[in-house]
Length: 111
Image: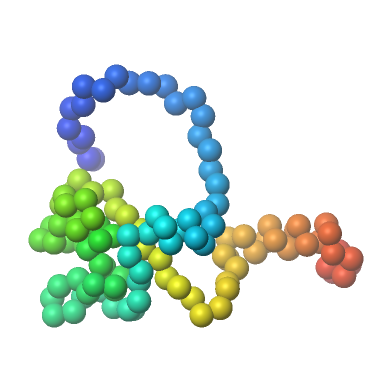
């Protein structure tokens, strides 16, 4: 169980939560790095531009996060992005996309 340090900030009730989908440009803007290599470590250290790039958070205790400068216990993590050669559908949305297309597409509605 993770223990958080004391904060003098007053507690407030959550009034609402909103979820949304980020556009590709928003993702790139918020991303801390571009993941270009399918490896995690090189020479015993996290490879910059790799899957364990320290800009996305600490992979081990010995390497602090280079984005927020804290260790792995305190850093909640940051995300990077991968630029694909061709546009791809996110697999989690495939069923929803087919349902929407069946509502508007004459050919798909007959399948």
